[in-house]
Image (tube, rainbow, N blue to C red):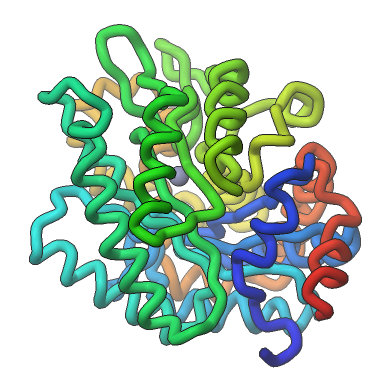
Length: 381
Ligand SMILES: [Zn+2]
């Protein structure tokens, strides 16, 4: 392992499963300015962290960000080397399985091949969509999720050829709603899921659950941006305690954007949460800067989003311009990839600094300051 290359994800997970520290995992849909700001803060605070993109964001065709695994890996590795920061992992977020048929599984294996080839060191298999709500027992409901997660975990293990790696799995679809509101993962589902995976020889360190959060920004009925206050803390504790009794595994908190940082700092059950994913937050900061520093480009992007998503937004009853852009502007990263990568120097510097400052708050709220040395000492890095 050359210096500043990503560490195996399990090195980070293992150090903090029984610790207050939450590993911040950042979905940087653009790396321009953003990744360097985060890396600089991680270095200054000696905080462990992960860089990640989900399958929807980054796949062999560039996902919606324009990044392939190879391109993303190169971009973040270059920044790690520039900043000279060592305690980080490169994570494949939401390797999502929607149907679970052979065709889809084979396609996903090709993506995993590319991620391994690009030097990813951690993987999140998300077969939570395969939950069967037409049957009654937990065993039947989770059957396909367990089978598919096992198959893909074994595939990763085989193809990593003895190299250590991080593994996250998912039970309970994040943000799913039914007639009673957000659907929450139960302790019974979580423990059954982990036990069965262990019986199959699959030992994840991270478990993503549905605990009341959703991905992206949160809006009220009128379309105003509001804080996300829906994470069910007591349920998270119940699930965290229960799974910890059956295996060495920590909860992964998805969809953190919009959750007040003081609430994370003081109320989050950090003993049980090992990793926290932050994605849309960086996109929001990026556009906060672009709209002031390069208003012409921002206008061009906005017009593109309107041309392409007005119709869909109408169907979805989007209420305000703020909500419209907050939901759809992510799709502009791909068509504007070159333009974003040639932003003016001052713009990039401002993005970097705003992301640096914001990361200082996140790392503090996540109790991650000074924790990178725990990893260095344990693994003699
Ligand atoms: Zn997620």
